[in-house]
Length: 469
Image 1: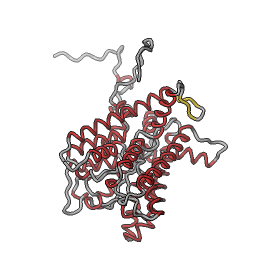
Image 2: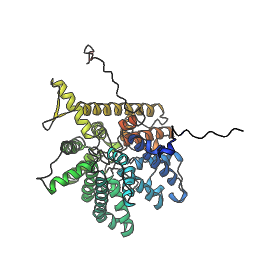
Image 3: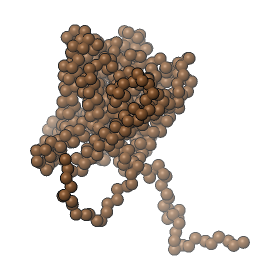
Image 4: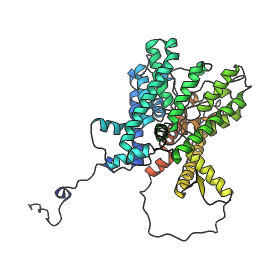
């Protein structure tokens, strides 16, 4: 029997040199880790919602339905195949609430907060991952940024709870009213759109507080964390701080889309007896404002979308697809992406080679990134809609309902023409994938499963003979 040869001292082993192979989790790129964390949260949430303690006595839920509800909560969408208020127990509702909060802030953001609480050092790789999740532009202040994001989010949600309690406490009692206030405040700020009422917020269409507080929370959540911080810093000291280009563009687009949505809804639905037609003048304006805000990926509604005109539905679909600001709790392709796409196309039509913004030139990489996000999003929506049509077995579901449902799922909005409970399991799975891809972003998902960037040393000559248009 031969004895194993001793290691050659000229070629030391990794253990001898102190080098160890990194755990597989630390080798993941930021887009891969973002996708994985959201997937793990969905799976854990699904398991919790399937527990008997999560259901009301006599209620049952299929695994696909539990997966759908967990995905909708983590991806802050709001689509529901079952009524959360009557299906889930208090424990199940709390699980949904935690999934909404986790999905809104992001698991990596919360994980960094816990590391700080345990006084663990946050390395450069962790900073990169957090920065990508919240769309941060710099790494230096990521740790401070996480603290500020979580603290400001909790404060806004608590303030929303206090304001909403003036409505829900008189109606539901002290304990239940405070719980309803907290649930709807968290749901609104995170742009989730889940409600504990079976008919949503349609019973509050004439309530001025609901029509003002809920949209305010939606706007704050969809503004974007970095934009919020930049605005606060600017208001605190205008001499030392200024609004950056991203904040200016985000605020401008947000205001324009809110005005456009409100005016469009009021004009198109003003005489519709099923929506605004029978309401007094003040209530018409409040309802138009609420419905103009909620397509910003929020999902709440005080009117029935299945009774609206096709023109109104078209405007709603457009607003849902555009979505909220980057780095926010909302979805869609994002307002800045839409602007860069439109501005670059308009510049090309006018014969300009550069796309400008606030006396600055938008670089080509940003334009290509915006075009990629837009093209991938259109492709995913069309593919998802085609599958929804091919898998449809319910003759009562109309073409418009399925398309509205598809856009709502991908943009993580949660608005519905009362079609979600009528879907079959195969269609539910399609929407689950769309919600997941819409939340993490199509470009993030594509990068997560693509090959690492490998720059070649060869660059070929440009070709100018290809005809476009």
